[in-house]
Image (tube, rainbow, N blue to C red):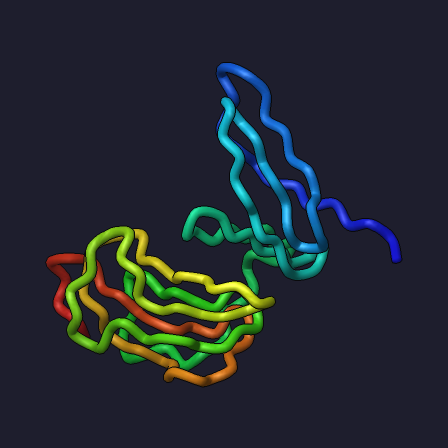
Length: 153
């Protein structure tokens, strides 16, 4: 089996060196300024995901591909989707819940690890499209959130 490289863009490093080492398939150690962080990577060369520090980063050759799922009525300001095939462990919000940037809204389990799906902005949950115990596929919209101050449709 050949090796697969995963590349990502990072902010410019001003001091010191950034080093990354593969620990296991899909598991990397990144070291910078004396800190060591673990990064989980999944997916294919064309569509890969990295999970680090509660955040999910996507590298896709087909960024214009539509997300699968069941979008609610109207347009959500933010749709949070599954980064990889996973099982929904916990749903921490319901429609109408006020959330703050960084709040965990869903906890998934994939590849023997827990993935906290967090919101990247303040707002109100307008729809939840999953339930605990459900198996979800990549790009399945799990939660929709309207910006703070926006009326949900």
